[in-house]
Picture (cartoon, rainbow, N blue to C red):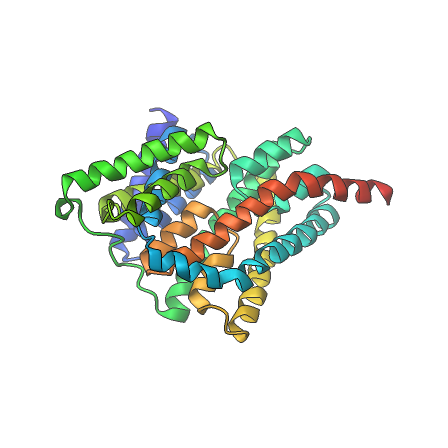
Amino acid sequence: MSPRLYAFLIAGAGVAGFKLLDLPLPWLLGPIFACLGAALAGVPMRDTKWVSDTMRTILGVAVGATFTTTLLVSMTGMWPTLLMIPVMTGCIGIVGLFYFQRFWGLDFATSYYSSMPGGLQDMLVFGEEAGGNIRTLSLIHATRVMIIVVSLPFLLSWVWDAGLSNPPGAPASSIAAEQLLLMIFCGLVGWYLAKRVRMFGATILGPLLLAAAMSLLGVLQHRPPAEAIWAAQFFIGMGVGCKYAGVTMAEVRRDVTAGIGFCVILLVLTVIFAEAIHLADLAPPMETILAFAPGGQAELTVLALIVGADMAFVISHHVLRIFVVILGAPLFARLFEKMNNAK
């Protein structure tokens, strides 16, 4: 069998296992755990990039469809917490650089781009161009995304009693055909246009912006159906697990362990900032955790959709974080490298 078919079947088994055991988020966490276990056992697996990208467009449309004029007006009151995103990103970068260099002996480029909480693909491109170890970068970022995505559902369930088994949308049979076609149009055309202008996070942000425009005009009146959101969870979860395919025990001992340690640092920083926001009464605690958790944009969008969080608040903060990292990472890399070489 091909590595892609292996990944699909193993991810499907993960969904079935989670459903059988009545565990939360079977369509997302089931594929992650099953593919991770198979990867560590040496099973050859590979996800299909164009399928994963297509699934991300569904999330973009789902978020864009929630935008209303009232929601946009409410975003103007978010500036106090939005200003904290660059501060938190800077703290993560400084602490992460020190952690990876001093405790794990990684070179500057690998340490710096491992600590940046941006998109996996973007950080791999920047890190490789700067001379970093691409395999180490991939494993550390995959570990960051996996641990945060796996731990957050349980935190949301235990602390805020969030419903993780609620359907993420209406069934497809209840939505008019023209609305479904409009969603497909927003997803594909938004993705294409965003890619043409080289927009960061094009697979999510392009469909999000086009769907938001259609929603504000009153043309788009539904979110994507539950079946589409489940499919998006499935392939995104499979992709996270497949990142570990071919991992060796030496890499587990160094890179994955280093990534786990960094995740502990990230979670501590997230809690500190979330507590500060809570004490200042700037935002609800659940939305704050979802907005400030430095995980993958797609995965956290899924969680926010399922628990019924304020999508405008959560997505605005993640978009700003990715924007700050993508624009700032290469610039600050030169500054930190000069300081590092001057020592």
